[in-house]
Image (cartoon, rainbow, N blue to C red; front, side):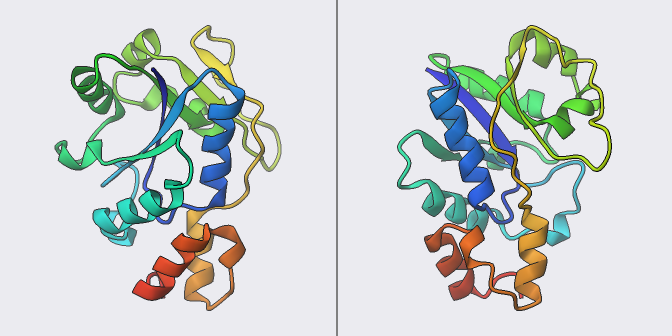
Length: 193
């Protein structure tokens, strides 16, 4: 099976994440998208993250009605901080029957050359890229025309988890930006207040 790996902290998962993931399984050759919940990114401060299991629970309830979208806790069991190449190697060993591919935004592609072992990733895996909006000119990437990089004409999402967390803290009603059950869980648990 051809699986797209959508990495993120999903703190919290929102409709933008679901729209992009669903677009990838409906309008590319990917058969499933796995939301790989990152316990700790080398580029983010850990203090702002909800607990790993709470974020897993949010992704679980957000994807339960979509048979081709799945949550993955694979990185919870890997040494931290973890790098994408380690996760890919681990997944290949655990699920040799699947073909894994990366999903990333154009902004990540522009800085992809800074990733650990990016050359190996590019040699072994395809990358599916969704568009972003930029203030000013779109940054050029040395990988824009690479044969393993596939630009997918997905909807452009301007929703961010950072915006959602701040809005909740500011007591704004952002319920339409979250799947209903995710909103209910966040409200019930009193998160981000």
